[in-house]
Image (tube, rainbow, N blue to C red; front, side, top):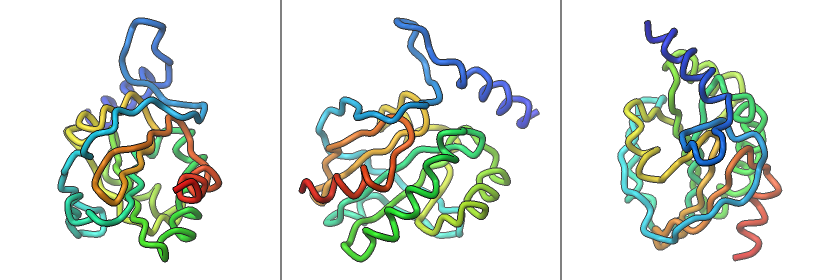
Length: 170
């Protein structure tokens, strides 16, 4: 039943919403998205590795927050890019958080394993964090500054170069 629901939702999301229709979609082209600068949503995320991450505990650090799903082709495209950016930026105190949506736990864990993702990742099974951020589709990536302000949004697959450029501009 759950697998069928995920499949149905996946098929629906792969169809881009028509103008004016609204809804969520798979974002295939990477581009800057409009963002209302505001305090980033505070959330607690049960991590796939068994830990618990509280967004408020990351205050004082820049945080890259990425929303993804294992069945999403652009998410597969960007996974190695995110890991490479994480490897390049973690020594500068930048935190990365991956938030898995609309997925099964087994598929999400296999995705993390197959792409060798080492930064914290966890599921958002009810979509609460996704709604608080205002996600319109996946993948989407957000930048939270050290003061806890949501300051950037990237719609679609993000590259290592784009993420590094965000920190060079600062």
